[in-house]
Length: 314
Image (tube, rainbow, N blue to C red; front, side, top):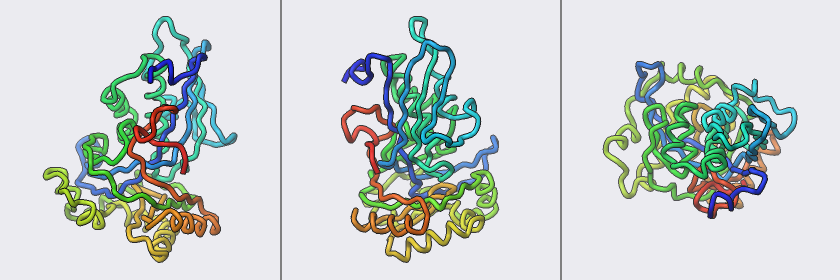
């Protein structure tokens, strides 16, 4: 499909930005630049924020949030706004940008919504102002915004290393149904990393995979043993997350973890009906919860063929 076919005549484009989970995360040490050296397996999900991006004759970048009243802090610090600054207008193009952001991914949950929104703006503006852009160029721009942004350009199942911004394709996660639970609280990523650093453990499965690569039977033999080195620190800081995780496991999830630095928790489910039942169980307790499926892609310009990117829905 041509660039013109993906946007309407008014210079408007709609991009879907997927959530992610960390199927595993290991901390390998502290870097000289102050960041942590990690290795992680990232998985995109079919739960998306929706961004409508429009070129405007009025200079500047304006961000409109939905639902109304949502507080994401100062607009100039928002990752989506910062991303828009990286794709400047050409001489013949309108100088301004308007971004209508519909948030569906819980804020402060560890599901990557802010980084996904930034990747979506890079993709959408590159389409509007450049007629498209090579993914590797967008990924490189994304590294200046945050460690997770390149992943959302690529999506699917990826091994992330360095700060998480360097990616290598991983075997697709073979499971199809899971439940997400957000315990309605935000957690400081920095404080969790500080706690976890004090409790560093020996290298695990992912540390070895980084140098050796994935075995053909990785998901059946080693996948169940993936760990999150941040999980203990999250549970120590917020016992409520631990209670949700324990309850999810008691319901029968064979693989349940905190994602990233929290506070969201995910659990593998045997089928869609069970995932929906579990989600309803947590909804009745007042939590945000969804039955979701994994995605093989990343940020998606609406109208692209399914499977090339994260599809809309939950």
